[in-house]
Length: 120
Image 1 (cartoon, rainbow, N blue to C red):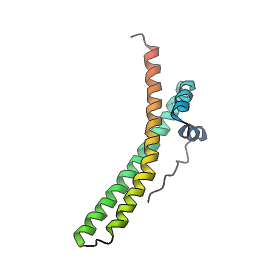
Image 2 (image 1 turned 60 degrees about the vertical axis):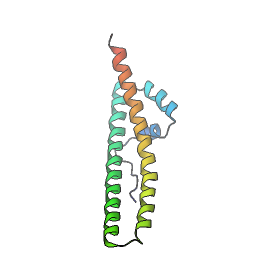
Image 3 (image 1 turned 135 degrees about the vertical axis):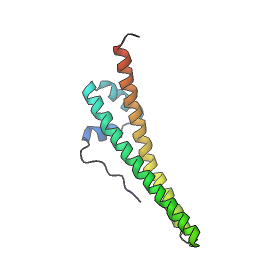
């Protein structure tokens, strides 16, 4: 099962931001200056895409292995592949959803600042 590895270049402040509740994260993002907001957004978005890619590759591999096991008549392997699929769905999906929520929080704040700066 693939593990979730935090990129070494990620700041400790961003890790703290990722572990905040949604309300705290929203309040925190409003207090950031534009440069920090863009920095947070870039790092969290990159981490999100890395995990999405890892999730897709893992699920594709399991589905391919399952198809091969069914084709070759190795029915005894299928329950372990199903268990591995459930583990990946649980462990990676939970983290991906949290990252997606934080990306959306940062995007919303960036959009609010853009519209607040212009007189529409």
